[in-house]
Image (tube, rainbow, N blue to C red):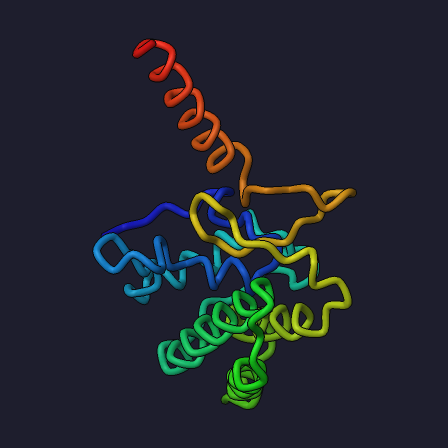
Length: 186
């Protein structure tokens, strides 16, 4: 299956969160889609992160992950998701942080690439480490529509949706439908 990476897929506000959000409908086993199940999708993700990622200026152009390093990226993705979901819901557990730090260390200790572009897995590890050391954990949120993790960079920390143009509009349309449906029944 071929996926197109759009700006919406980078609504997390940090590379580590965008990587964690590469699983669509994570908690719905029947509809769950792992966009990284195909190695080619990981390569195209790195290219799209260069265009759409919030941290593209920080990391510069990213190189795809070599096939032998993909397992480390996937381990990092799962540890990132588990740790930050627990932190957001105030159920953080020390072992989740330990798993995240071990996944970060595994990527950073892995075989080095030649000089040139920073590999996607290394940039993701650095992004996750920055988030873990974040002094403002209340900026991390979970979208109530799609369940994605995102950073709320709004001035008053009132952002609700990962992407207002997609999830916010879906919710508004759903509310409008239910409101009008009730009016027709009356």
